[in-house]
Image 1 (tube, rainbow, N blue to C red):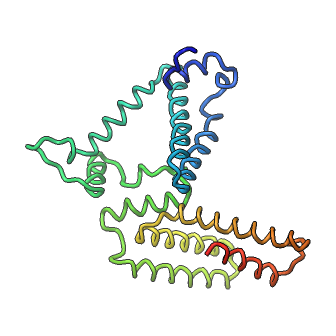
Image 2: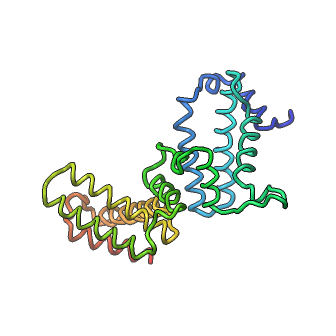
Image 3: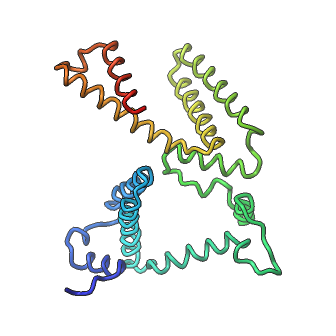
Length: 250
């Protein structure tokens, strides 16, 4: 058998010899990149090292593939990507790489100060395309680094209560624009609570979705066992089956 190529050589070979890979571009690769990112998150949730290793490999392939597209246009190579991120991380960690004669403070606050000295807003680096809960968490982290934050978690909880009351008032008004506004404010406040308790809102919601789906499948299974269409079972029976499915997980 021929020697197995390294990843860079493999991607180049696929681009040269595989009709499907040759037909791809940045636009067609976007869904695969997003899918692989979520597969990595799923593997992290499962806690399976073998699965995580596999999914990280799939994600790394996407990085090499996109870099290959740029290289073919004469823009940059994967080596350029590696060099750029090394330079960036070294410049962002002077407390690690500085000389003893020129020590630098570490930590997130120092990181943000160095970015600010470069003329950038502290929230410039948070991609607008991130899922909204992830972006809310990251923006809040950025502004909290300069002290724009509640003094303690009680303030966050009070803010959630305030936004909940304002949403109730908006619902009573019947103004759909106001309802959307206040609902967004409530979600934003709730995402801040996650930051204070060390829980990612995106991760927490993803796991809550998974729990809900498992339990609803349990409801459907119980309905099927009794020969009942869930849509015709009625809320009382559905709720009873739901509680049974929930107890199975406890």
